[in-house]
Length: 505
Ligand code: ADP
Image (cartoon, rainbow, N blue to C red):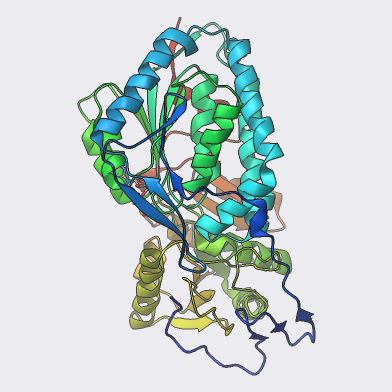
């Protein structure tokens, strides 16, 4: 479904026809589409549950559709796991833990993880296509970021498996047991890698549940795990929606829950595990502040802001959704942002030219549109690029708001879409106060020419990850995680091992 709003017309703005192939800009260039071929990806008509190393029919006997959000066409149907299926998967993971995985020498465990990484690399093209088909993100993102970073994550943690005594000198790192892992739809394969790789490296076994709108790359990962000959039951993958996730969280034989998703569900999980022995890590929402000082390289900063909120449709928990610009350069930055927005291509996720793909689901598009209308009602001034949207599928124009007040909902709440709120500031103290004034604390960005300012600011910003003169950069070696309502626990790096081990002397 395309948004029903009429595009704002501006003389300067580009004319883009995303559905009808030709894109012509005021630069005079015409873009020819460069679509990646769907035929390089094989998707089954139906997927069962991956339990104990094999595909098992769901006890529920139910399946649900997964669709392509760019076309609203059905891609496949996947099993809906119920509590009985969760029981089977947890039992398989427990047996694999007791009988095989915890006893296996760490050097052997490492070889399996390494093998998974290699097969992901071999199948990179197919995985990227499926990620873009199922989730709506541009192929450029899935091809150049999601899939290689997922492979790197497995490589990285394969390296730690037999070096835990060096990671934690004079202590013994003991695995916890069976980990229940629940992931969202914004980085389906990468989130699976973030969860599974450190769990396996530390000797735990896994039951993973992907999000209901993006199950396909996790199911492809199950095929890869089979191909890597991982002992049965070490990784189990169950598809389903919130009820499946809740059954996993509440299962008595789970030792650890790792969750990435909304703050609301994070709170439910927190309540569900209180009073149990289950260990928990939560990676929840965010409302990142991107701060531009007057001495920053402005063109570079504008590109960083565009990358931080618009690429990937703003479907990133660390998206730079609040922009704080020093007053003296605000006009110039806003003009540059609008110019750059007019050249962004919204459309077919499989087209290599596309900057902004499809919103992941109708429900998410409705949420984003609701926030855009809240922003207007709150008195902020809206600007959206005037690109034409495809007739089918869930798409949203890149949108920015100026004249935003700190207390406005669009400046406080997570929108999870291509919507940027711009606020201004005069002094360092003022911007720190404003940037920290949110329930979240996941990430932030600082743009300035002065190294000392970067260090002063990063000490005072309450955010788990802070980028300086760049944004949204990831490496398996750096820990990621938040403060306050953005959750707790870290993923990535040496710190990412800690949530999966008990340290004894
Ligand atoms: P989002 O708002 O990003 O979709 P959610 O928090 O709703 O995030 O979903 C993230 C993951 O949590 C998904 O895999 C979803 O199925 C799962 N989930 C939703 N509700 C629950 C719940 N009550 N208990 C456990 N998992 C849940």
